[in-house]
Image 1 (spheres, rainbow, N blue to C red):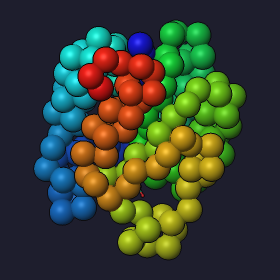
Image 2 (image 1 turned 30 degrees about the horizontal axis):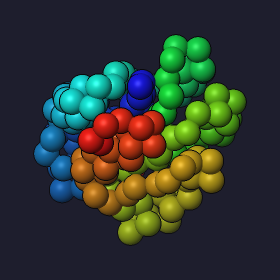
Image 3 (image 1 turned 90 degrees about the vertical axis):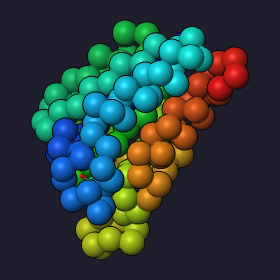
Length: 148
Ligand code: DQA
């Protein structure tokens, strides 16, 4: 079982970036927790963060042939702007869950629309870093992990 976690721009600053909105955990801490959950379920987890749209597109495309079975993605600001990331997700046709730390629907109007939600298995927002953990549990369960 192989799951890919993708983090978009500015999420490398988690922990210090607007902690009232995004929480106090760093990205490294979140990824480490996800790695442990995956490992305990006998799965492999890859995590990738980029501030660059094209790098995210390249990583999504690579998922087509590297054994990835499920993607968890927080496209961050690209959620609201990137047709390229949406098209890449459509092209690889892997199941994915969209995660946002904050509740984008309680924020500025420009954050209310997501280009990727329509293609997602599900969307989790507003639950902080717990959203990633819940998404991973769902991914593992849907891939048939024991005890997930
Ligand atoms: C975010 C919400 C986006 O609107 C914002 O641009 C982000 C993070 C979230 O996780 O809440 O960078 O995706």
